[in-house]
Length: 94
Image (cartoon, rainbow, N blue to C red; front, side, top):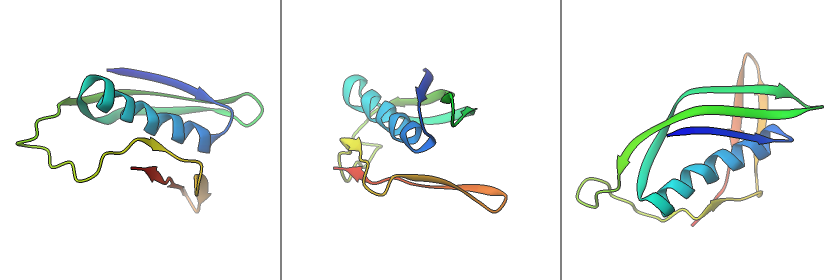
């Protein structure tokens, strides 16, 4: 499943990306992971992410879903540069 999203800030892009995964879980019954993730853009023009989402239909005999995530919230949402890498934080609404 291809994914292409845009947002004015990196933290909001993270929220939209997590919400995209939740959408596929709820609407299509799929459990997915992201591969080939590419983030681009800049603060003045906004940011984009493209990724391939791969996975399979949810199978209760194979996937132990302990909590049902409904969305990514704004509480504690952050994406920041740390040294040579990046660190992110997101709170999930269950």
